[in-house]
Length: 206
Image (cartoon, rainbow, N blue to C red):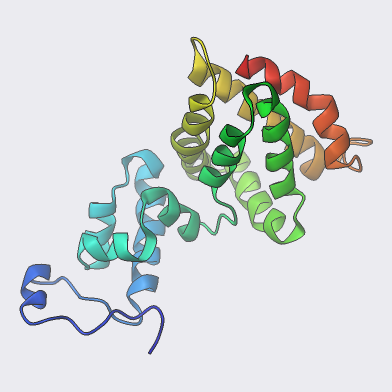
């Protein structure tokens, strides 16, 4: 049986989907992804809803949750983001408070230094720098997922602003390293940059 296909619906299950709603089929996952790409492009990350995406795909909202779980994971799959930002934030929060700046630099740069993950990430970043729709998507996704969760690992006031500043600084580092390829930053090791930039990012956590 195809891993993406749902089991046969139980008696009466089709009625719960309502007219025009399809139960799971082998192509359902692809239909949801196509609908998600259209919805995110039109409405942006924050305004697009799982219910609206389900309606566009012609499926029950429960199927969207079944395949993707959360809007964050659906977005990541729809735009082919090859990492879990929740995992990045979780890894940072697992570190002692006094080491979270270094951990954030280490984990964030580690994602971008992976050649397999870097290519689609750079494509998304370049699109965000030149297209308003892509910029809105990345901004909404980054704010609601990365920034919000990193802010949870901070103390004191203005945590969201400090989290945004930390993430903005790291994106600047990525642009210098992988887009502009400024030396010696482009060829520096993650450890070198962690030692150099980690204490700076740590100031946002203290």
